[in-house]
Amino acid sequence: MSERLTLYRNAVVHSLQGGIEDVSTAEAFAVSGGRFVAVGLETKVRAQMQGAFDTVDLQGSTVVPGFVDAHAHLIDFGLMLQSTADLTHSRSVRELQDRLRSHAQKRPTGWLFGHGFDQELFETHAFPTRQDLDAVCADRPLIITRICGHAAVGNTFALQHSSGPLPPGASESGLLTEDDISLITAHAPEPTDAEIDDAILRAGSLATSLGLTGVHCLLADMRQLDRLRELDQRNELPIRFHAQILYRYLDECVARGLRTGQGSDYLTIGAMKIFSDGSFGARTAAMHDDYSDDPGNRGILLIDQPELAEMVEKAQAAGFQCAIHAIGDKAVDVTVGAIADACALSGGNNPLRHRIEHASQMTTSALRAMVSLKIPVAVQPQFVLTDFWTVHRVGKERYRWSYPFRTMQEAGVHLAMSSDCWVEKLDPYELIYRACVRDEVSKSESLTPRETVYAYTRGSAYAAGQESQRGAIVPGMLADAVVFDEPLLDIAPETLLKIRPRGVLTGGNLRLF
Image 1: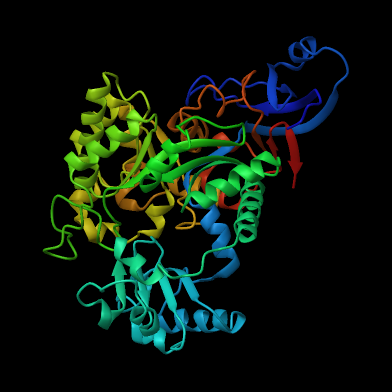
Image 2: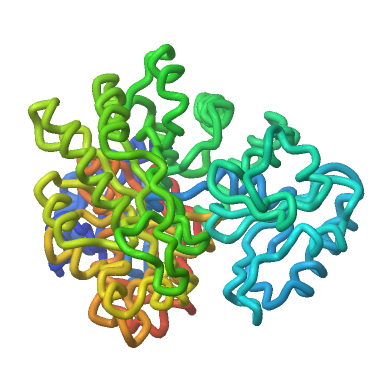
């Protein structure tokens, strides 16, 4: 946090205070104590500044509020950078095996992990098997996870040392989905405190270099929260963390006296994370009708509506927002219904802003309820590119309601942008590009760069209940911003993949690249 009074001048400053279509700009802003203290014409900003101050010439740059990724596994991503083979974009089982062999040579002992394969990129479209992994390594555990994280394959060694009975067929194929994955990962070595700290600092520094000033971070366990709190107390966090905690830790959080919104400028307590279904990639997202490319399969509804409503009610009574993973149209309908049931008991219109993560496949009834209950939705534009096979999963008729960003926005749903990193790359510019440039079948659901950036800033703040503190360049708000040489809000979408920020302001401290 910068305590020194500083004037930033000679810029095109988009505060985004006035909404998506607000085109008004400022040319200067002042920062002190980690917050904006004045924004507007340079003469007017200078008139409000008392005493000595520093001056920074931004040389005509465009300035927007800092990006906040509303759904990312940032600490797990940092841990993966330390120890996991990158299998993304593997085009065959042979290429996947070659990457794993190279990884195994670098880690000659202990467990082996790989992440990011997508069987739909293979010519066969078939999942790798335990035999494929045995050919790489047979004398220690080897586990690979699909890019979505909802399916995994283990080698024979890993399967034989599972923590419980395997589901039918898994012993032969090696394939596990959803909660069953834990059967082969339960005995994996836990990272040390030092490794978690390194993961937070490494991934957080990378995020900052890309223009992210905050992240709604999904935590794997309470140790990750403890490490965040320790680093926060030492003023070492490189990025602002809004911690999303798995629902199974609700009782522990209550015992610790935690609730949504508590914390400091760099670490706040967020929502309780609940899973209502799986993923499109693993064909475990809960659908009302059969998958078009897998007749007889409608996915998996992990929690029915009455039980989900009870979970939301319990969290709500303890002062916690809920963030509910729902991808298939049936799961989204059930989730909206459960939130409605819980809110009816509270006598308010979703006062804690229970939110939905993904909402990849929608129905009109769910859309109406989201607007009525003011349910924020964390969406992931990169899925439109990665899940290129979605139209085959759901069929052309239902694809009209797959990732319907414009329909949701125009209806009044509060969108928050997110990458779901480690599932997707931590790349804000690919994210904005994919929101703006979609496939031919779904171009009507495209957003503009301005609309996407608004959801990446103001939208993310709203989803966390932090719109009075973050997401705009306004006096009194935290001084987080991104500086560009290009006019980002009105840029041609095809140039988005080529740009990078000139600098990032976090807590009033400017870091130039």
